[in-house]
Image 1 (cartoon, rainbow, N blue to C red):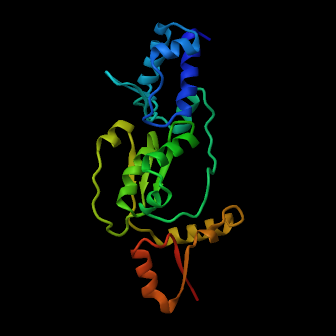
Image 2: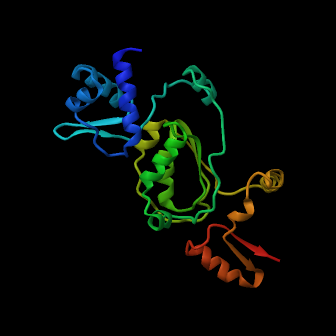
Image 3: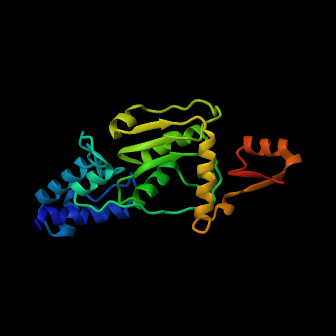
Length: 240
């Protein structure tokens, strides 16, 4: 391993411990801490900046950026792309939990959208998810979900079958990340059957019952609709 590569890896370990927007030590300090020349440090920082892990601001310093990966303009599958990079493609369930829907989540937990994006990146080794499904129905979540995708990923917008209103967004994100964006307004009867089969076949694996936050009798239909409209319910069901 070259000295520059070793220095890059050690700086990358430092970046991993810092948050997005935090400044890293100066080149002089890194040179002293790592026992290498400033030229080697500068070359390592240049590599990390090109890869999107750092951003340099003239007169201010070097700061941790939201990481991204380079994506070649070729028609390949995600599996082929990862194998070409010497990585082993795979999939796993990162987590399944009951959370309230909508933008209130961040305010309740004092967690910003950028922190949620970073959390997704950390769970996917810095790349972002291959496929992201927006199922919230809050316009602000659409913009947030785009940044959770890996470069060249797919983004499915499924939660907006009702008009939740407009949202400001930058179309450059779609171009920069080379996203495939797919919308689906409704479903066909065959999809309902497929969903029921999925629930039955995986009910021992996933706690679907715990995802229900509100239960109503049929006579409470108006109350159920009002609760959903106020974003107080993540998933409501009627009990007969």
